[in-house]
Length: 530
Image (cartoon, rainbow, N blue to C red; front, side, top):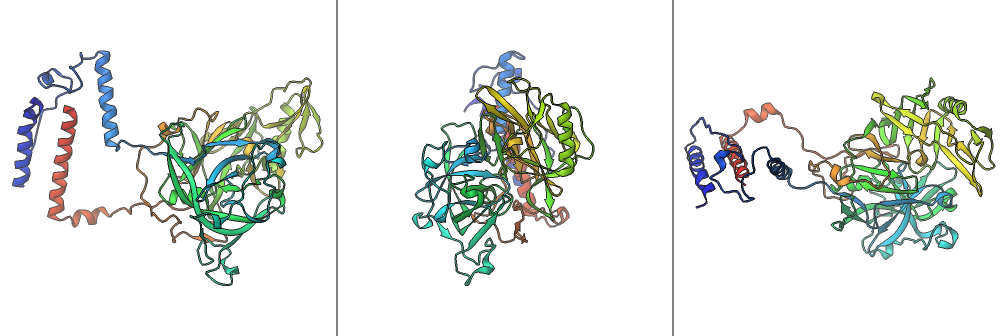
C-alpha cells in the first residue's frame, strides 16, 4: 500500500466510525504544509519536495493554487458567441451610410447576409421574397466584391411561421384569423424609412469561443426571430442596410434577448469600433475587469432602449454650465445628436478653442466647420461626457475631416442639434472603445481598445450561468406595453426563507449535511496529497 494511503487510513476509519455511531464528537487534527519537512516520507507524484522559499518552491505553490482554483470553479469559463463567419465588423464609409456591418448566416441550408448593426432597434430583418427591396448586386456598391442575398423561408428547412396569436406578434389585431402568419412593420428615425413583411423563426449560425480566434471554437445553432423583409422604404432603398439589419436592443425580439433567454450567454454583448473601420461584436461579453460604467435609465418606466444620463459635457478642460441631458447609445445612427441647449454650449466652447478659420462645406450637415491654416489638422480639443461618480467617456476626435487631393480640406464638429431633451450618441463617437451593453446589470460599460487586443475569454466571469428555459422563444410572463418590450429577466432560483428551512429540517437532512461536511474535508486532504 502506498505510504500516503497508510497515512490516510486511520483518519478514514475514524470518520467512518464516527458517522456510523451518530454520536456528537469533537474532531481535531494537525495541519501540515504540503512542502514541510514532515511530508518528506510521503512520495509526491510531481517530483521531490522543493527547497523552502526557492523560486521552484513558489512556482509549485502557485501551480497547486491554480489547479485548486480550476477544481473549485468546475474547470470551465464562459464562452462568447459570435456569428459563424467571425466576430469582425466593417464599415464601408459613405458607400453604405457610415454604419458598421457584419456577415451572418441564417437558415438550413444557411444563407449569408451583410447586416447593419443597430443597438437602437430590436428586430433582425433581411430582404425576403422581395416586393420592394434595395438592389442586391455588388455592381451597385463600390465597396462590395460579391452580391448580396435574399432570404426565402420556404427554402429553409428550419424556418417556422410565427402566427398572429403569438404574443410577440404586435400586429396580431390586424389579422383576419389567429392562425394567419404574423405581419410586422417597423418605422425608423430617418424620415419615411421602414421595413415590413412577415415574422418567422429560424436558425442563426454562431460560433462559441473565447474571442481569441483559436481553432477550438465550436458551432452553435440558435433559434431567433427573423423579419422576412418583403418591402423596404426610405433610406433602406438608398444604401442604408441593403441586405438587412440586426437589432441589438433590449426588446424580447432581439437576437441578444433570444440568446440570453435560451441560456446560451450572459444577458450582455459588446461592440468595439476601431478608427480603421474595423470592429468586433461578441454576444455574452460582460467586459474587462478594468472599465467604467453608468446605469441605463428607463423610458416611460421601461428599459426599452439604451439610455444613459450625462451629467456634464466638457470641451478640453472647460465644462460649460447646463450641459446635462439624457442620451441614447445607438450604433445604428451614424453620427451624434444633442439637445439644443447642450449643443449650443458645447459648439460655442469648441469654436473658442479650435485654432482654425470658420467656413462652410457644400452638402455638410454640420454647422461648425473650419478650414485649417495648413494641410495638417490643428490640435482638436477632446469632448468628454461625464456620468455618475465622475466616470467619463472621452471622445478624443469629435470632428469629421474632409480631404482633397493635397490633403485635409477642412473639418466639422460632428454634432447636430435635435429637438426635445433626448440626445443620441452615434457610431462615430463610439470609435476607440469596447462598449459593453450589460443588460443583465442594466448598465453601459466602456474601456479604451483598438479592438484587436481583446483577450475576452480571460476576462469573463467564472460563475455559472443561471438556468433558464430551453424554449427558444422568451417566456410568457414578459410584459409588453405600448409596443415596447421589457428587457427579459434572468431566470433564477427563488431565495428560501431561512427560518422555515431551519425549523423544518428533517433528521435525515441533518445527517446528510454532516456527511457532506466530512466528504468536503476528505476532498481537501486528498488535494493536499496530490
